[in-house]
Length: 74
Image (cartoon, rainbow, N blue to C red; front, side, top):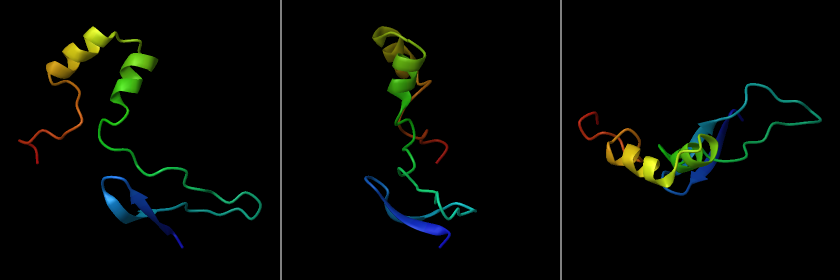
C-alpha cells in the first residue's frame, strides 16, 4: 500500500510513492499530483516575488525560466 496510483493530466497514470507512516485517526492523503516543470513559475514570480509582467517576459525571453528542459541536456 506504499505506492499510490495517480493520474496526471499530461504524464498519464503512474504509481507514486505514498507516505512512510499511517495514523489511525488522521490518515495521510495525497491531495494533488506532482507539478510539471515550471508549472507555477508565473504565480511565484508575479504573485509571490511581485515581478511585473514586463520583467517576467524579459526573464522568460532571456531563457532564465521556462516550462521545458534544455534540449541540449536531454
